[in-house]
Image (cartoon, rainbow, N blue to C red; front, side, top):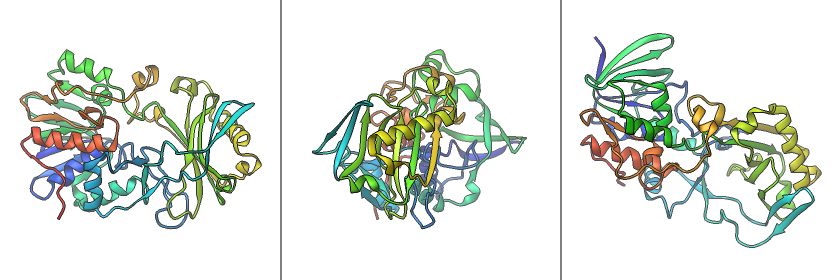
Length: 365
């Protein structure tokens, strides 16, 4: 007999974890996650020895005035933020011989980052949940929509589950590609899954860490926009405690272009760009951290590599329920207003809970 639960959530990114956090005190709920870690595209490793010396390899910014759910959750969990460093001039690289310097207000003047990185949200939510609820290394491979039975592979062995209700908190392309549904998903939903890009899937972030913030000494904010590359955007990614300093970059090459070059070649080209932009001090690198989401098979599909990236936007009229309404979609790609953002992950989880008759929203004590 399968292991039965009232509610099974598939995917332990922010959306799935938030749904579990909302439900766990009053419901028999478990969370199945294919990876060995939770957090999904939220990934914030430490680059220093002290507490909160984290950098963000996934989403990094929040905007309290525009993201009310995230703001309320941060207050509920007692999470702290700090202003993105924007003091000084920014650089605009048109070509290697044409690098322009601009003063004035930064585009990130109203951006904030979490102390301890965005992973602090994941840690706070998971710390409130009994660890027995979260099952990592558990890859769901099939779902029977008639019986709500789930087959998964956990540590090389088949596991069978059943549930009264199921929340699918996965990027739509990953869901369509990795899970076999019986009966099959309808053609319209399959096409919608294929048409909805996975946010971050095509991106590559590279972080260069330093003992000293040499750019600040040059009255530079660290913010760079480049039409030449290979890094198209750079900003000051230093943790709040400033034990270590960092420049965080987005690589402007497409996922397909990155596949054609070796990682060593990419790093060499990035270091040459830093030399052009900032001078010799930029070569005194303490460490380099690379996260190419396009080669992460829990995030990216072939469609994400071969098609242009844009913010996901699932229509309000698109059904987010499967079968008889007891299987529902969540994940930031399914949000109505904030697709691709942390706020969208929370929005979609609240919508999924509402569809299951488990109306929940963040309330402050």
